[in-house]
Length: 235
Image (cartoon, helix red, strand yellow):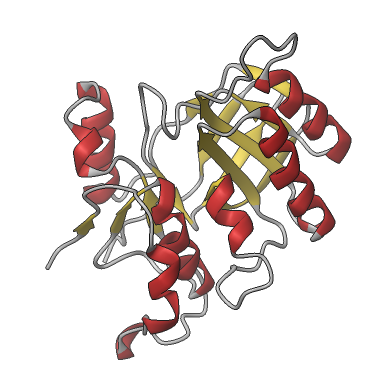
């Protein structure tokens, strides 16, 4: 087996976390290990990503098989280059700055809804010094506010160094005089952390693959996410 491509996001990965074990050759790595058998997926697969990062492993937040056929050719090329190249992937552009500044750290996170369900469990990776990636789908602004506040009350924003926001798709309140972007901006500003939004990651029309657990530089002022290491070992 060379890799694990998830067929879909769906529901249920939380139910298997306490059944997972590391193979003997990956027990307690001293730092983020370059993957040998990478996991690729997003959405509910966020729970499996956190298990990987909790154990010091890199995994790929990227398209599932049911989505891959609808995505443009450059996204396909980026995914397979990420899996095969020993060079870091090209930077990703965002679209808007919520809070200016820059920060470096391991890229952690994924789907906001799933991530909040892991707070207080043994499966949340250490967030100290991380760049937090968040995305979601079909969650109205009041739910985004509630989940973000859960992260705040759990002390997450005192641990991470920056926030990169991906796609928040179908998250608008019908007939409201505010948008989900405005709500997220207000929440991000309150953290005081460098934060850029609009990265093409998640449930939108484009879902660019990124290596979770790899070190990145977030320049929120310039709205760029730069990858500082490869997910593939040079050995």
